[in-house]
Amino acid sequence: MGSFHELIAGFHNFQESYLLKEKEFFDQLAHGQKPKSLVIACCDSRVDPAILLGGKPGDLFVVRSIAALIPPVGLSSPRDAVMSALEYGVKHLDVDHLIVMGHSACGGIHAALFPEKIEKEFFLSRWVQMAHPVSEELRRELTAEPTSEVLPDPSAPDFVRRVEEGAVLQSIENLLSYDWIEAKVQEGTLSLHALYYDLKSGTLYVWNAEKEDFEPSQEHHCPKEASLCHF
Image 1 (spheres, rainbow, N blue to C red):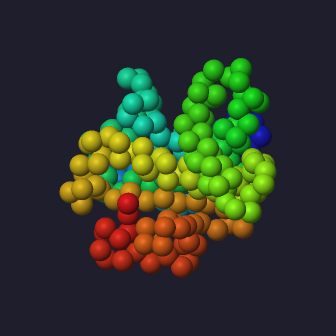
Image 2: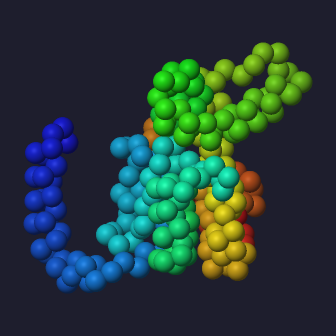
């Protein structure tokens, strides 16, 4: 859609194709929401979690942030939009699942790897700094290898991919820094999940806590024991 007019036309199409044809369903939604899952996804226009995960209106409570980054408890501000949405979803909607979904070709991660390109952008430059520990740790790991003679190239596809995946896991760790999230996880009433979407291959990867790796969703089988399925 290239214009605002097309967006309005798109709503009219939605109204005719869905709203009027499924009036009873949408009438029920008008009285409240009871989503079971809260998805933290990147703002990228190519990665809409409701579409990618096959959700219907009312299925997902969605929070979107650059690179799907979540501030740890010490860095969140009193007026943090991301954390206020998370608090509402966890405490008031009582969701069962918190899902962090990253993706390939992420502009936010690119900005984190090349901070000089956004140094004059006040909000963005500070936000993506939250991904710096991931890239720094990866650099330390790679330079510590016996075969390593030079610093890793931050534009190398494999390096970028590992930082994108690592940022998802860091957001999971940051979620657990909030006692009201960590307590529910310990109680077994809230599960945390990590997803990574590869735009080029169209593959969704799911974090396997047992294997400590992302695996294609086609190969992922969540066991009945919740502790093996989430973090």
